[in-house]
Image: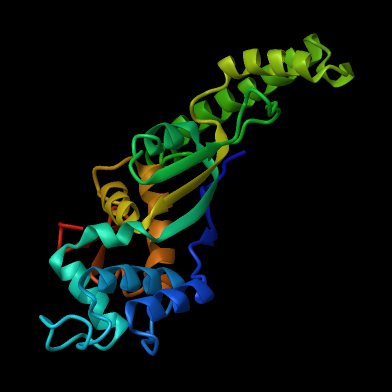
Length: 259
């Protein structure tokens, strides 16, 4: 069956208000508050201001003025390219019905990320779902070839399961061994699931790299969805983004390439 990648945001860094309050007391800024619109933006702001003790003008004699809003403060962070403070906020995504073409490319982004992928050593394939790139969907003959191939491979998985009588086995170790062998005849285009977490600095970089017109189509489609979530949920950390449509898919870029 043809599928389309789905993106789920399942977690993100949260502020420990008690701990933050204790820190501000210790730093001499007990009354400091922020109008940050999310915990991740608040964390970024706190770590950034702590570097210069810029919670107010009274803590650092070198400072005569401070930016009073979270939005203006984070804009300055982006403008200056102070990317290190963006690494403190971590977001947790889950990508469903993506191909192993997608996951093979995703794992190239290792800095500031964590990946937990569905294991086809343990999860037995039955029907093989798949994503069809536009160049295939627009060609009826190519679609016929794709559909026939994936259907035949699905049949093959079922035949192997029947041959080894996997449904009648009690030993999970036995089923695991056979399932692991069966995955070797699964195509790289098989739909799978993968959990993916990263910090905001890495997220910004990967969005730009993987929504670019020269990136693989399935990654462009998926990270276009990621970017849409990011811009809406953490608007001040992605305020410098602009988007244009290239080949019917969004391309996200920033003027500032430092962060």
